Image 1 (cartoon, rainbow, N blue to C red):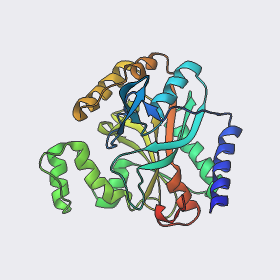
Image 2: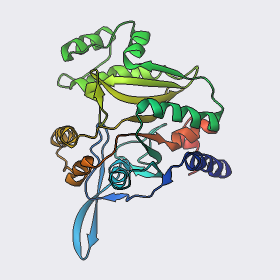
Image 3: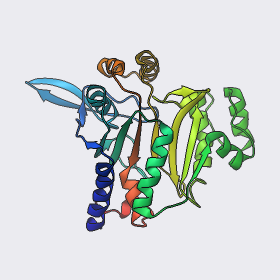
Amino acid sequence: MLYLWNTFLKQIRNFFYEKGYLEVSTPILLDFPNLDPNVEPIEVYVKEKGEKKKKWLRTSPEYSMKKLLAKYKTDIFQLGKVFRNDEYGRLHRTEFHMLEWYAVGCDYRYLIEEIKQLLNRLFGFTEFEVISVEEAFKRHFGESLPKEQEELKDFLKRYNINYEKNEDWETLFYRAFIEVERKLGWEKPTFLIDFPKELSALAKIRNNYAERLELFIKGIELANGWTEETNPEEVRRRLEKEAQKRNLPVDEEFIEIHKELPECAGCSIGIDRLFMLYVGANSLDELPF
């Protein structure tokens, strides 16, 4: 298993080296938390020069990598550990490996083609499916995704999906979406694209949809990427909204670097999950590390 893990990582690194990416290494301990929707950061306390300070374990290397990208404007990738609170199960761990990369001058459609090439190298896949979130809902439920909050509640009631009275649209969406994603990627790897704008994270929004992708294989989400929003004011609006909702601080430096951030697309893949499929395991429990 350790030999396979070594080979697996080598194949991934070589893939990006051959495409001209530079491998980078960025801090695990941050002064500010990642403001990822639906992801809980872990705070830690350290002593620096005798002074006690609050730090945060990165939930992804996104902020630090974009700071490098704004300065050097070249394709970069990273393989490293990330940490997320309150996550443990067959497909989840508090600590896990993440692959993250950024392609300058590209969009989310380019990322899809690049992921196809990577999956072909690792698994030999030659056939793929690309469908919109709207199409996935129609396929599973036989009707479109409701756009309004009260309509979405009625939708959940019709399909006997439980929800809490005061949940927002995004939370309600994911209660329905969990039923959809379980059915994705069983015949061939499936890319889900064109997410509702409410689920944009830091993706560009065009034609009322977020230019975002997620990859599923055998009902397991493996990749999450998008065309990056480069307007600092729009990034500020989204991050401050998330920060206020969760009472977390905002990294002002991260917002400012968007003035220099080139047009680009970025993606992350949970490497432990991908390796699980690579060796035919059914759970992260079967991995020795």
